[in-house]
Amino acid sequence: MAAMTSLLKNTSMTTPPAPPQPNPHQGNLQVCRLQKSIYGLQQSPRAWYHRLHIFFINKGYTRLKTEPNIYMRKTNSTFILIGVYVDDLSLLSNSMNYLNICKQELKVVFPITDLGPMTYFLGIDVNRNRSLGTISLSQSQYITNILKRFDMLHCKPISTPLTVTCKLSIDDAPHTTKEH
Image (cartoon, rainbow, N blue to C red; front, top):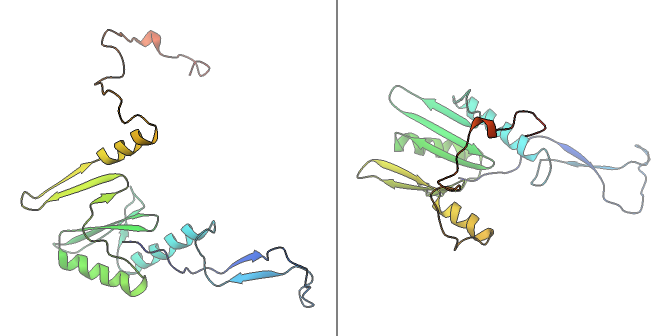
């Protein structure tokens, strides 16, 4: 799901260079008042996250103390976890009905795009086998992209970066900050 839209805060910025047109009520300085935060402004991600955070708290979600970008809501037998990364949301639930309710709640406030079941997220391929009840994660495509970027796609793979005969000891380790 993706949704970074109009946000709450009013923002001021100086006007672009142009022939000065003094405002008799405010002196020579003119400013524009933006009615919302937009892409490209420094505070846009913060304003977006704050609005999303308030939405989740008002809907009864709790933010994990160990991972502040994950929100959770649970009842007796069902739960939903929502992972937030910039303007992408990943939803995980043990109930399709609960998942659909959450999507509808989000759609009321934010224009969202439902991308369906997760197949790729943050460089990780997600493969789900419903018949076996398994989910497997792989970074092979991510690794391939890195190898292509550095023109190393056709390098010979080896199992270790050092020769097998290389012996390391604690004496080889740096002892002072200068040696680090």
